[in-house]
Amino acid sequence: MSYRSSSTLRGILVSRDAPGATPALSPRNRSSGGYWLRVGSRSAPELPPPTNSCASFFDRVAASNQTRLGSRGGGDSPERRKELRRLGRYSLVAALVLSLALCEAVTRALENVAGPASKPEGSSVADWRDVRSFGARGDGQTDDTEAIIRAIAAARSVYFPAGTYRVTRPIEIVLSETGPVALWGDGTARIEMAGAGPAFRFIGSHTGTAAPRTVKPQVWELERMPSVSGLEILGRHPEACGIEATLTMQLVLRGLNIRETLHAVRLYVRNRNVIISDCHIYQNRGVGIFLDDCNLHQINITGCHISYNEAGGIVVRAGDVRNIQVTGCDIEGNMPLDPVVAQKAPPTANILIDNTGAAGGTAEIAITGCTIQHTHQANDSANIRYIGRDGKNRVWGHVVIANNVLSDAQFNIDLLQARGVSIVGNTFWHGVQYNLRAVDCSHLVIGPNVLDRNLEYEAQADAAEGVLLRSCTDCTIAGLHISGTRRNPAGLVLQQSRRIHISGSTVLDCENAGIMLDQCTDCYLHGCLLRPKDGDTTGWVPVREIEGQNNQIELRPQSGG
Image (cartoon, rainbow, N blue to C red; front, side, top):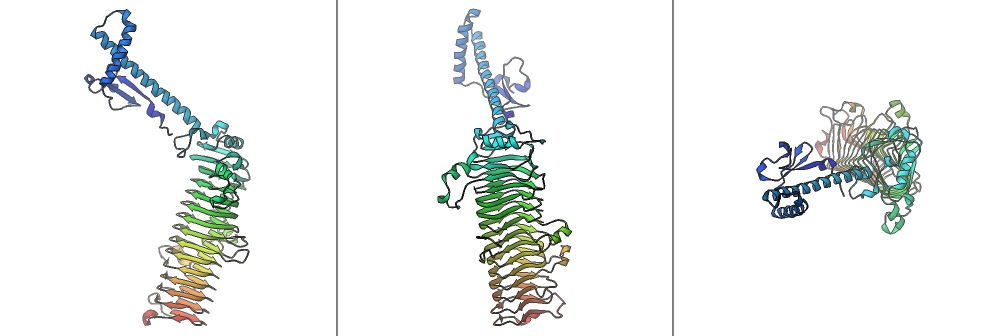
């Protein structure tokens, strides 16, 4: 059930013959009969005159009134009937006005209980409670921790109206005890975490997989889809965090602004089917979205702004993770902002997936349609870094990186010991060491991508750019466009690699050489356009081969420039 603003119910129905009726409330044609409904300062269209059925009703009311008023004299004259009929109209008008007033009163009462009309679709009035009705003040000074705990214990879903709610210790939500929980606001409420740990910690009991047969009835009945939406969480303690979750099923985080915490979102131990959408994860001291040695299958991160988190934007360390989708996000500058600190800090990335020591490995990943940028000033920085070898010496992958904008890092894409990675449709620039580096990888497909040096970006001047494959096997490079590399041996460099197929690519204006094969075997290069920068042919060669074996290189005579 939905409720419209009570202002639409503030009206008065006025008869054209009402004594003292003002022109603003009277019909335009007073001879036509009928009524006006006035709402605020505007009059609604004129209601039609009474129909025959209405006239009959008025006649019956008049007859009744005549019986009661007959002793007052006047008989059954036409004038008396007209007067009584008018009284009948006034009775109906009075009933309508009372009904409108009653509707307004009920609406106000329901709004006080259920919160504003923007509550999630499909909710029941009885389910939604205002956190203030449990004693929360929202004044930024009072400790509202206990009041929020009482609200969650009493109501499955809790609304936070505008205000600043101070929390001094983690609010633990044990879903098997509370039932399904939704914490929500309309974007005007702030949670200030003034203690160590997360503002909200969700604890479930789901130990199964994503397969329906493994989900216990208790999880469906009491623990399904815990959600937080429409709130800001602000850290006010050095160890304050935003939201943590463990053993949950179908966690939903939507429309949040989490900043100045340690880790904004941390998922640990085990979770399934997580959705994080339309959030601002901004300026946190640790990681933006942290999968911390977590067993997690199915997580979608969409439409988020993830920036200026000093230990990485989206970070997966160890664990057993499958089915990560990162789509339509802006992910920038997730490294220390201070250049001095950045040079000393451990290497990180805007998106870092590190299988080192993992029990199960992280694979099956799609990173699509994002802008991922900054900063080359950080130590060994990368926009996307994937480290594929786990604690059992297995090599993981099955990664798609497609249709992204990548710039301003030491490496735009950095792959180490990865298998089965497709890179296509991206635009790269300002890779200070390389735009793309792959080391000890296999079964890479590097398709049409643009690796450009656009001189309109003056900061590019210190970037070397280019592509490096070292100790890689069984890879395909097709349709790649590389231009303007500096200081590197060539635009495309292959070192100690084998069975690499290069075709249909364009390498332009690169220093030293177009393509270099250094100690490579069984490679096939053909159908490429390789050109030096105009007027700069000194020492430049289209392909430089060093100590190679069984390589097949097919060049047209004019490709030397």
